[in-house]
Image (cartoon, rainbow, N blue to C red; front, side):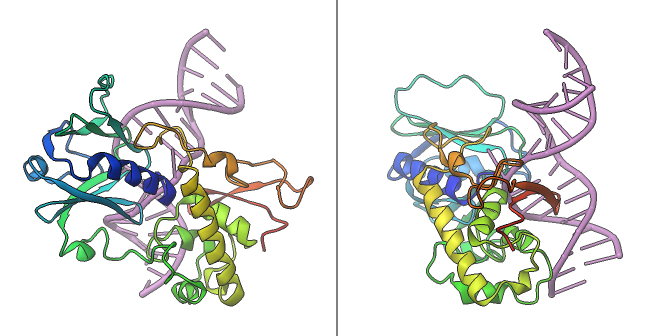
Amino acid sequence: MPELPEVETVVRGLERAMTGRRIVRVEMNRPDLRAPMPPDLVARLEGRLVEGVRRRAKYILVDLDDGTVVIAHLGMSGRITISAPGAAPNRRDPHDHVVLHLDDGTVLRFNDARRFGRIDLSDRVGLARHPLLSGIGPEPLDPAFDGPALAAALAGRRTPIKAALLDQRVVAGIGNIYACEALHIAGLSPRRLALTVAGGRAERLVAAIRDVLTRAIAAGGSSLRDYVQASGELGYFQHDWVVYGREGEPCRRCGAGHAVRRMAQAGRSTFYCARCQR
DNA sequence: ATTGGTTCCTGCTGGC
DNA sequence: TGCCAGCAGGAACCAA
């Protein structure tokens, strides 16, 4: 799915399109995503004013004027497209599972071919206790996420650091691409046991995570096959990947000769340089 | 308690 | 050119 930078980019697009607007009509074309959507979704959205849109981990949170919060996750193939008021209607797509019509004519479509995404409802007061959000770790761009905090989260864990970074309880929002990139920047082997990432190594990894996520957000995220920004534009951070998807290409840091390798970890592809990542 | 494997679903791509 | 196995950004769930 879109990882943190992609979700952040979508949230910024939604924020512009939705804030201060009223939802006048909701179409629910297919209620069975990864989990069934709430049966009262349409009733609870229609007529509500949108107060804001924000992000937590890879979740999109839409605050409504009655205290309801819409929780949306894009899964692996989910996207939200925005048709500006007066724009030609999009071609009908069988994977537009939920369609929102706003009072200014804006149309938002939640599209997810693989249906790994989810949509749920909560309320502002109980949001932190919602089962989807309650166990999630610190936001990586929050100043509270520092070397000692990461080291504490990794203490005693005998899983590879790559797998630990994908664990949303350790740190929020990192997925396969940015885990590979951050470990390369930090010079840490993806195979290294998580518990050995402490002290200076943890500091380096935190700095690397912040660096890659910040640059990716600035680029509008990475566009893969299934991902476009809310506005329909493409992010371009995929051109800045140093290891992800570059199997066999020379490591940009080591110079010629040392090829980027690919291996499987926990069923996912890991890309790394065996020379400069220890 | 941690950890690794499996599973959900569809679409695209690379190799034959 | 055509076919199809394998793979894809995630994470909940299960068993050990």
